[in-house]
Length: 184
Image: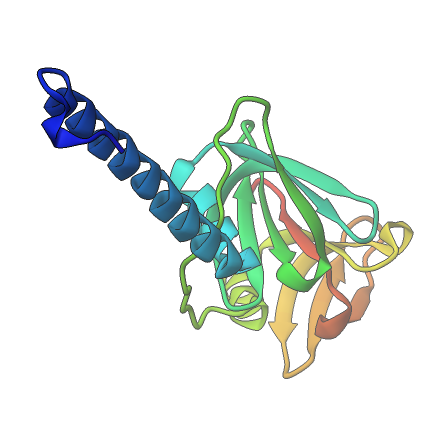
């Protein structure tokens, strides 16, 4: 640090050094706060941040399927998406492998606590009330079930099958996603 008694430029040099030191300390504090926020980030918090942006994301599921759309809702164990074409999909959070933003989107850290009580079973019950047409997909997409939701029990969904008819009983715990068909 400069000696104040050095003469004309000593005070200016000393003040400049204080400004530089303060800026360095501020950058260090900012990095520390950013690091702390990142360490407190959660997947649900990231989903909430992305939902607020209402921008398209790609959700990759453990069963190999993926969906592109904006996150429209986050429940206790599910995430709702709407594609640009208006198709709605509910995805069980536990089956999500990754969520990718489009190039150029800012990074999010998800440093918030999200509290919600809506569950996948609640969503299924609402769909049964409206006899919604759905595609139910589990761990193996080859065994998807398409039809009208008729009832939801504690751990089972009853679906009247499209096409030749018949009924399927699907274990709620097996579901990875529920795609809603257009009504009409």
